[in-house]
Amino acid sequence: MKISVIITTYNRPDALKRVLDGLLFQTRLPDEIMIADDGSGHSTKIMLEPYLNHSRIHIMQVWQEDKGFRAARIRNMAIAESSGDYLVLLDGDCIPEKHFIQDHLDLAQKGCFFQGKRVIVSRSVERKFTHKTCNSKSILMIQALKRQISNCHHIFRIPFFPSYTTGRLSGVRSCNMGLFREDLEVVNGFNHDFEGWGREDSELVVRLFKYGLKRKENPFKAICFHLWHHENIRNCLALNDGILKQAITSESFFCRSGLNEFDETKTKQINTQTGD
Image (cartoon, rainbow, N blue to C red; front, side, top):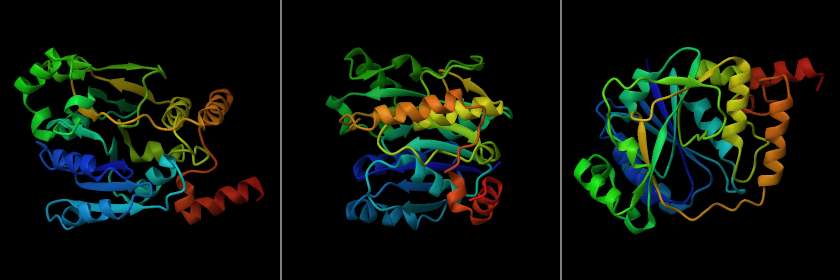
């Protein structure tokens, strides 16, 4: 099964570099890596140059103009350009542990999407935290004791710990999520009505639930390490909460403006059905 990793980023090349290094250090490499760039400047382009020419894995940057936080749209643009059967969503400040891709592959299950877990890296150690750090149990234990990382229980790989499914919406995070391409296409991907930080991942999951998928979890597999950053501006949160509520009350699992923006055939079909 071909796996595409979709990495969302915006003007943080130092963190993105460490995420890419982590993906290239995997026990099972992804088949391709798509950089979903929400309008980063020249420094990100310069940093990416040696990675885009990487011979082992197809790595591609998909970029859109900086018009504020539009993570939903740039993710869809990267997804539309990708070719994997299974998509792993990852943020550009979340460094994957070395079993990350193999775990996602092992946990992929028809009828489910997988919600991964994250360990939070504090401001005090964020600058020096790399893929080598997150793969060293001794360093992680010291950092846990010093409270430099949190959600520390996720660092233990407990053999044969059972995965489980749930219909919960709380705790949904697209910074670490895996799902089949065909499921995402059926619901039309992320909703482009979301602009500004917040709720676009929850709204997607509401529609995945309505389509019939279950949420699968395992607290000790497919772990990433979320680097500290300043909080995003939340001035659109009230509006985004309203869009989320509409999705919850709606009977439809399909959003009108999503992946179809990058598929002319699908857009024409939708416009014909709606009379536009």
